[in-house]
Length: 475
Image (cartoon, rainbow, N blue to C red; front, side, top):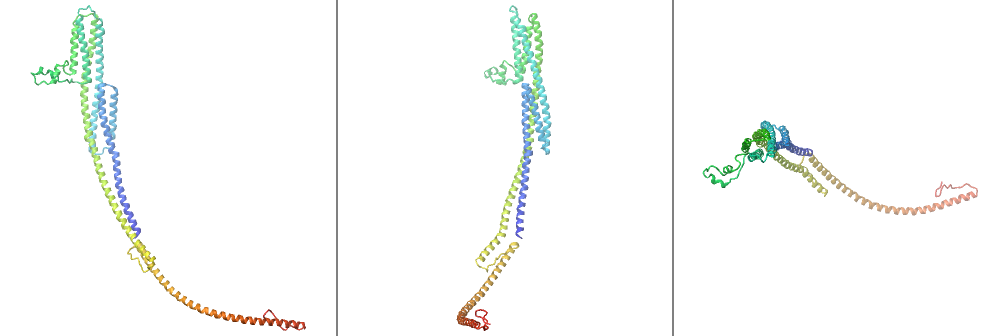
C-alpha cells in the first residue's frame, strides 16, 4: 500500500470516528434541546398552575371575609393565569396518559371555576345582607336612642320598667351584632378552656368532659349562630315587655319605626346566616376540588414529567457512555494507527538515513536492506541503484587514477629526457650563436668592402659591380 493510500486510509478512519462521535453529540444536544424546549416549559407551566390555584383559593377566601372587589379581580386574574399556563402545557402533551390526566384536570378545573364563581356570588349576597343587617340594626338602635329615650319624661310612672326593657333590647341588639360578626368573620364554634374548678359540679355525670362543663358554665351557650338567634329572641322578649306598657303618642310612632327596621334586620340577619352557611359549604367544596386538582398536578401530571426527566436522564447516560466508549476506542485506534503508519514510513526512512550516513563515511559496500512496497520500495531500489552507481564510479575513478599515475610517471621520465635534450639544445644554440657571430661579422665586413668597391668604381665612372639590397644580402 502506498504512503498516500495509508495516509488517506488513516485520515478517513479518524474522520469516520469523529463523524460518529459528532452524530452522538448531536443526538445528545438534541436531547438537551428537547429537555429545554419541552420538559422545562412543562414543569414551569405546572408550577405556575399550582401557584395560581392556591392564590385563587386565597383570593376567594379573602373575598368571602372582606367582600373587597380587589380579591374578585385577583381571582379572575389567577383563573386566566391557569388557563394560559394549562394551554401552554397542553402544547407539549404527546402521550396517552398525559392527555388523560390533562383531560381529567381540565374537567375538574371547569367545576372549580363554576364553584368559585358561585362562591363569589354567594359572598356578595352575604355581604349585601350583612350591610342591610347592620344598617337596619343601627337604624333600630337610633330609634331607641333618639325617638324614645331622649323624649321620656321623668314623671312617667313606668319610666323604670321602660328603661329596663329598652336597655335589655339594646344589649341584645349589640350582642346579636357581635354574634353575627363573630359567626361570619371569626369562628362558628366557641372553643373554651377546661375550667377544671367546675368538675365537682358534674361529678355525677362522668361522660361530660371539661370542655362541656366550661360551655355549660359560660354566659354564652352554644355557637355564635345560636347566640344570635338567642339575642333575636331576647330582643323580641324585652321589646314585647316594653310594648305592653302604657305609651305616649311619640312612643307609638317610634315603636312602629323600630318594628319596621327590626323586621328588616332580622330577615337580613337570617339571610346573613343562610348565605354564610352556603358560602362556607361552597368554600369547603371548592377547597376539596382544589385539593383534588393539586393531587392531579402532584401525583399524576408532575409525576409524568418526572418520568420524562428520568427517561431523558437514562438516555443521556447511555449516550454519554456510548460517546465515551467511542472516544476511547477512537483514541486507541488513532494511536495504534498513527504508530503503524509512522512505523511503516519512519522506520524505512531511518534505515535509509543510517545507510546514507555510512555511505557518506565512505562505505560504498553498504546497501539498504529494507523490504517495502510502494514509494518506500521505489526509494530503497533507487537508493541502492545510486549506491551501485557510486561504487562503479569510484572504481572507474580509481582505475583512472592508476592510469593518471602511470601517465605521470611517463611524464616525469619524458621530462628528464626533455631536460637533457634541452641542455643539449642550449649547448648547440650557443655554438650556433657563436658561429653566427663569426659569420655575421665577416659578412658585414664583405658588405662594407663591396660598398667601398662600388664607390671606387663610381669614382672612375664605371658601373657598380655589386648590387647591395640590404645589409647582409647580395644579388
